[in-house]
Image (cartoon, rainbow, N blue to C red; front, top):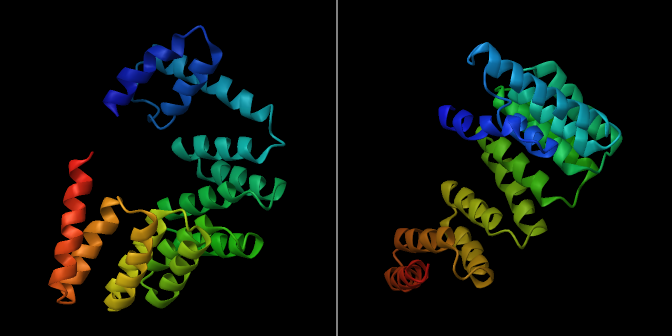
Length: 230
């Protein structure tokens, strides 16, 4: 927190309005009362500029998400949730509105609400890998392993360009005891992302667990080559 304040605070006096606004956004989570009165006044002024800018575009869902993020950072829970919901109403197909609202509930330990938002989003956006991934993580946190694996499978299927989604799906499979299937998923992902370190490390570990020492060594060699090339 102290480093963020030290780096961003001077920008509150920048002559460019956009720079002042970005600094205020970065400093939004600084608790009221943690700053001297003069600094707090400067921050409040820039914060008001940011709010005014977003409110001028209030009919756009991204502006409402920005307002929601600001309110959430400032601990204004009701206003944050209202802004996110407004964003979903303005454009029911705007995935970031659901993802941010779900993450807001997650941060408050409201996992049932998190899942509800993501289920709603999935019904509106059945082709969104991001929504399925977020839903899968929510279900993991709720220890509903079977449902979580299915959501993560859908995420990996819908977002084939995401190495992360394939990796997390495979890890979930392995955690459930299906290491063979996890390896198949990872090998397919490795073909698409040959230098992904997480995938290579998992392939080494999972093949070792299965007793496939030759395959484990082969992927370990690839891992060393990949990391040496960075």
